[in-house]
Amino acid sequence: MKWKKLLGSAVLVVVVVAGGLLAYGHFAPRGADPVPPVAGVPADLNGAMSHGEYLAKAADCVACHTARDGGKPYAGGRAFALPFGTIYATNLTPDKETGIGNWSDDAFVAAVREGVGSHGRLYPAMPYTSYVQMSRQDVLDIKKYLMTLEPVKQATPANTLSFPFNQRWGMAFWNAVFLDAKRYQPDAAKSEEWNRGAYLAGALGHCGECHTPRNIGFATKSHDYLAGAEIEGWKAYNTTSDDAYGLGDWTDAQLTGYLSRGHAPGRSSAAGPMAEVVEHSLQYLTQSDIHALVTYLRSVSPRTSEGSGEVNLDPATLKGATAVLPANAAMAADNRGKLLFEGDCAGCHQWDGAGRQTQYASLKGSHAVNDPEGNALVQVILNGTQLKVGGATQFMPGFGAIYSDKDIAAISNYVLSHFGDQQGKVTAEQVKKARQQP
Image (cartoon, rainbow, N blue to C red; front, top):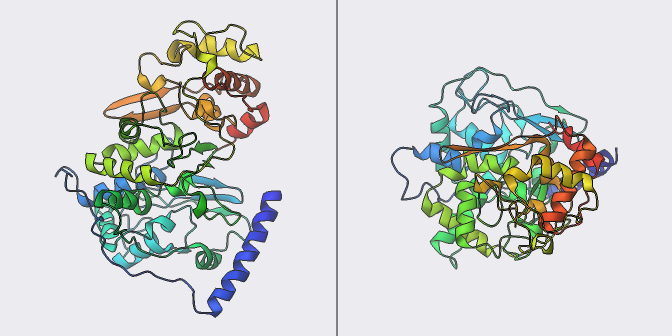
């Protein structure tokens, strides 16, 4: 109820402010439509993939427009739970009744860049707030690719939003206040590689939509760009150049490995929503585009992360630990967590956090084991994670069916204390709420 009251107040503020903007003729501003030289596809793209398919992967369209648990690619139906209801991704296949088969080029461009769909205004869970920067040609190339897909007749489930959030027309006011309707403009003071990275991260990859915290009106906070946020019960971690909380002290090799393969040696492995981004999008980017992203991320102003712990690469709790033995048998405040880790986790992750059988099992230096709130850690233990990259599948099973909420809280706090030297804050109530995530 508190969320609904706050959001209701936010809507009222947005309507009042937007009304003033309308009176002065500032409604729905549209930027010019230049074609920046960094748009399109990279020179090192091979002929095995069309321009449209490459751009669709760079924009990660399939991840959101495919229902979980066996949904057909691009056929829509994926649910997105919000504090005020649930919305569903639409069908992007060329089916003429339930997809985009009858859409004109202008209609498709309007949906992607302006948030205006066949049923009215779109909600910004569809990241038109980032796609607005794309060139028209890039959008049309994506449409051209989508029209080559097999049509899937699958109607999109109706959204279940409470009033007033179910009134699509209200998004016109939201856009008037929060949407920066400008196409990407290259920064002449920066290199072409940097500008390509900015276009990939912003216009196409829409990184800020997940990694930037949001204000009371659910718009991203520009002054906290890429400082980290919670999404779908997971933590989208800080990707600014901050040394302690972000990527500032990652090497180029670590950044490249994480972006292209979902693993940064000595640091983190992608899981949950980020694993989906790597699997469906980033692993297909060319070497030049990955390098451009690295160059751009290196330049993002450092920001600290609210609630997240500093990443400790050399925690005192691991000094003396080996692959088969922890450093201190009495280190756990709650021995239950240690016993669970010993029985079900140490065989793969090892007591020193190096990981066995696959480098993706390493824990030392990861964001997840250094975050006292333990959001990502709880999700991984509860539901497991999977990443298909480079033709191989990295898989960790979930333990939600065999562990109680109390047990998952205990093992999470033990992992945080042992591998990150952090005082974990995970509770059984937090785990219970995580189980309820769709």
